[in-house]
Image (cartoon, rainbow, N blue to C red; front, side, top):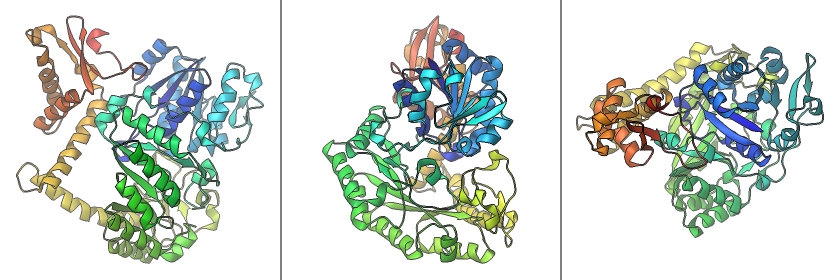
Length: 538
């Protein structure tokens, strides 16, 4: 069986990195005996013509996609195109959004044949042997599909007790050099499950209330796997990594014993960290910790069942500083019962922490308690346009605050941040910025340049350099590519050339003989990425 997996488009603002869930799914299909290909449209351009060519080349029996609520429409649009190109291809979708909208999804989106609910690795293992025979799908827990015009939902599958028996995410199938060029941390998890019941989060329902930790050896093996791919920074994305000092000690000791050198960050709860734990993490290379504090109002924290106290948040930030790490505090606006007073209290508390902090708007995703029991809360959901569920704009209101109030509140915070940022942007290249500020601005510009190169497939479009332009000097191919990129991209031409030259020097881009010239390609290793061929060599 051949299975193509879609990495659906994701905005730059969400700091895209190799999709972790898709990596686990790809590994599960491989373990079930499938030949797997990942078609990544996060760091490359999507078009119907492009996927048609990729499907023709690979000839998959099935095409699957994961999705969160924010990019569900893009994911199902791609599957709709797949069905239009070849109606015989089986289409599948998994992820938190469809796991909690089974009937709605299957009723309204005929382009999706099968939904995988919740954790899917064991479901995939049982599904693959009978994939071509729908008559045998009835006994497979964890899937939903249509049969004779009716929806068949086989219910959720039991959670996987031992995550160590799962293969590591198949990141080698992803366009690694593209992600390295973009430069964001690679995410990994050290366990699954969440015993907490925050009403705005679907995590407990998606991964279960029981915490299932991976062994220290498994965690360290994955770290080595990521570093072997050439990445230099990792983010530990599970909320409860920093919840057991002994386990953190074991992992940090293992990092030292294996001689692993890398920078990393982690998410954590403010009520589970200790000074000893954070000191251990800092000595092992962790330089920042992100805390979801959500509100500066004790009553609000109780209402949303966050399970933390204000003084715990203060202590957690203080301990990070003591360990020499950066603490980042995340707050949410538009929670049930939000008032102008609660917003101001949160603002005052956030400022008092004297650390980096930011705001997100509440997005009541499918599967969250607040959405499923909306009548119990002082909250009104204003839209079910899933593309608006990116947490960067108001999609709710309460009896006391309007969407405009929420936007104004966040806007005042952003105005303070943007004022200083605009000063740095204006001073860029003039000598008035500090060296660190100059690096921040250059990194910002470079990130947007890189994303434009990736999302427009510019290496594929511009990367063929004719022999006549080389004059017998193969080293001339680099400057030609730099000049072409600078000609089509907006922005600082010097920085555009510098960015492309850096890709070449780091080996992300490599020249290959092609016809009567040289074609630049994103670097690939056997069994890894398979980029489009340069147009002139097609």
